[in-house]
Image (cartoon, rainbow, N blue to C red; front, side, top):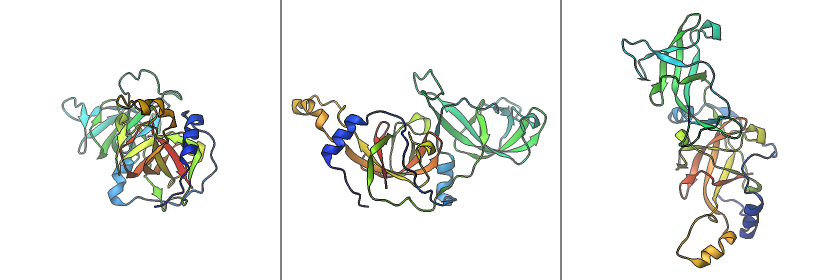
Amino acid sequence: MRHSRCPLFVLSVLLTVRAAWGQTPAVAVPQADAVPPPAWLYNDLACSSTLTTQAPGPLRVLGSQDPIIKHMMGPGDTLVVSGGSNEGLQPGQRFFVRRVLRSYGAMKGPDAKHPLSVHTAGWAQILGVDLDVSTATVVHACEGILLDDYLEPFTEPLIAAQAVPGRTPQYANMGRILTGDEAFETVATGQTINIDRGSDAGVVLGQRYLVFRDKRGMLNEYSMTFARNAKRIPLVEVGEVLVVAVGPVYSTVQVLIAKDVITTGDFIAEIR
C-alpha cells in the first residue's frame, strides 16, 4: 500500500513542536459500518486489553461453588458474584470478567493522569440470582479468572466492514502508542495495543495509522557524529495499525504491518 510521504525536514520540525502526549481535537472521520468479526478473530478482540481512568465497579468474583477455596477459576466452574437483584442482576446476563493491572512502581491511579491497564480474564453468564449474591458460569476464559476480579457488562466485539479510505498520513496531530495487554510495551504483527486517541478526538473503527519511531533519544556511544546531530535525525516508519475498538479517550489498534516491533512511545499519524 502506497502513502504520500512527508519530507524528512518537515518530520524533524514536527518532532520539535509535537512531542507532547494527549489528545487534540481532530477532523471528524466517517464511521464505517460495524460488523461482527470472523470467528478466528472473535476471541482475540473480546480478550483484548484496554486502559481505564476510573476505579472498577462493585461487582466482584467472591469465589466458586467448590468444596475448597479456589484462587483461580475457568471453564466448568461456577462463580459466586458479589451482587444480586439489588444490583439489577438477572439470569442470562453476560459480563466481562476483568482486573486492573499495575506495572512495577505504579502507585497512583487509575485517574486521568495515571491510566492503568485493564486485563480481560474472560466472560461469564449469570445463572441464579439472590438478593445480594449471584452465581455465574464461565462462558470463555482468556486466562485464569481470579478472586476479586470485577464484572462489566459484556458487549459483542465489532469491526469495521472496511478500513477508512485514504492515502495521506496526517502529521499535524500525531498521537502515541501506549501499552498492550498486561502493560506489555512491545507488540508484533497481529497483536493489539492501545493508543492515546479515542472518540473524543474523532477516532472511529477502521481508522488506520502509520507508526513512526523517534531515534533522537537513543544512545549511541560509538559515534560522536550521531551524538552531535541526533536532533536532526528524522522519524523512521516502523509499521501500520488499524483501530479495532474505540473508547472515549483511548482506543485499541491491531498491528497490520511491522518492520520492527511496535513499542510504547512510538508516534502515530492518521491516514486519510
